[in-house]
Image (cartoon, rainbow, N blue to C red; front, side, top):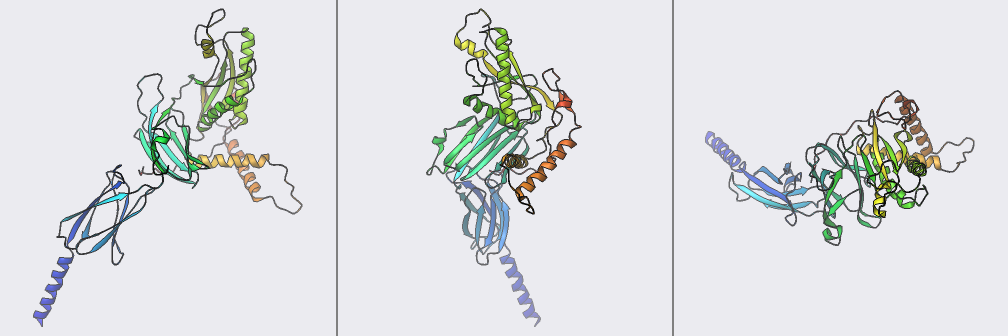
Length: 449
């Protein structure tokens, strides 16, 4: 009896020893067409017959993954990654000797969409060499799905990339201390637009050159330049033109001012002056008055479209700040006179606190949508409410939020401004205070490419 027990025990031990032997699975995940290895691919390994999960891991930055598995079984690899089609691969450890290796290649097709590859740098003048920008806060928000696509805090590289999926509208915001915030909009097969960008400079290759598979997939390389924020530095605003001897805002000037509107909205911590300049032709006093009226018209346009009047002032310089020698009595070509007829933006001060500094892009967009809704409600025609009826829910909500905003404005009314005091800047006590909403900044997310 004892011999039988020993034999059974020996067989069990031997069986356990045989079937507990491991083999090493190693693999790489890469994009179809040998377009590079893929990091952060989720790898789930299932025992084929039972569908029991035997391993779950992610590829590293080089697309590599490895795991130990029991020999003598059939397995399935399930590979998945955002914006890529999921993949299933079958393999077996039957007949594999212990401690041997099995190699697999996980090839993944990108879903319809576009890879947007960005390089950040300071805007350069002429051919000067500038350093790439590092340590930025980079956020991408999907307005269609109302979700954050990418959040990088203090990102220590000048390059980042993100995939835009079909049928979505994205907002990209880049923030770096000491530079103007850069906002870009991308529309991917939305309302008839196959791929449209707002706020992006040099994109290469041309959009039509990178389209493949019936315009469903492509790769775009973009150089995004940021302007440095400097006190008293004048920035020329291109293509702000007026009719002869007039100061009303023409349609083409409105389009350029709309771009400035975005810049000022995205940088609510700065106080600016909008200056208008003329050439030397005509009487000095007339040119001074005309330039003042033109500057005031441009400022009025920006204020009417949402810029707080306390943040912007108008200044007409007439012909007092010519950029060349074309002064009174000097013969010059029309081209040289045109150089003096310009509109410039100058930073003349800063708010003590940037209202957007602690807000995420998601929160900024949410606040902007609320303000737009509030304006629409306020601009609606008179709504008749009969006795005993309640206000519509959207109006109730708007009134509540408006009350909250008023309280926030009052709470900040004792705050101070750090500004460069000048005679053309309203006194501090006359400035309207800007609303500010405190909120926690979400934790950083990994750039999953």
